[in-house]
Amino acid sequence: MTTADGQHESKRLALGVLASGTGTNFDAIAAAIDDGRLQADIAVLICNRTEAKVLAKAKTRGIHCLLIPHAEFPDRETFDTAVADALEAAGTELVVLAGFDRIVTAALLDRFTNRMVNIHPALLPAFKGTDAQAQAADYGVAIAGATVHFVDEHMDHGPIIVQAAVPVAPGEDAHTVQQRILAQEHRIYPYAIQLFAEGRLRVDGRNVVIDGRPAPDDSALISPPIPW
Ligand code: GAR
Image (cartoon, rainbow, N blue to C red; front, side, top):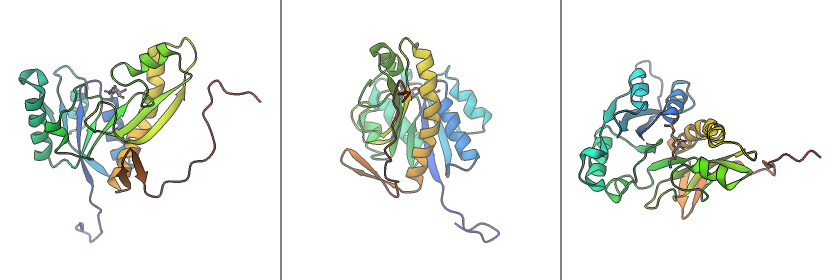
């Protein structure tokens, strides 16, 4: 695309964000767009819960938002079809699940194959499902974390794009662990979406190959830190 002053402008990725709750990941993505880290636009926010705080966050930012309450649909498939129709009507290229609390069926997934991502507050494949941070704290892990992954037909299962790890001390409550993980979610989710926007992600079986990815170094997160 060429702007009025003749400058070349690269095409921006159109995001359709699905959220059900507080919306801090939604806000982190919107902030990354605002400060230029993420070359994308949020074409639509779709929320399935009337009381969700994310709705006010979207309105404050002037982002097009739709309330589609799942409870008004007879089954998952008709709800997912309505959501897919709304995403397509908004021109969505990548679907971003940001604290979306519904299981996604083929009625939605098949229309966005390898074009739907999710963030989960655990180092998958550990602690799938709800209350992942509490599951990790209760289990007594020394390292917890977050995962951004492509969505496939199984819950919290698709190919992994980026993970972040955080230390956990014995006896820390789930809220403390949750906040520590959340801070990293807000870093890795915009980054993973930007990798997609740049066309740098290729799914190869269970692997996501990142074009231009630096080789891993040998540093490690060790919890507790070794003092010598
Ligand atoms: C986030 O911690 C996200 O990882 C989690 O819900 C929270 C939403 O917070 N998602 C899941 O547990 C999905 N299985 P937010 O509304 O503040 O972004």
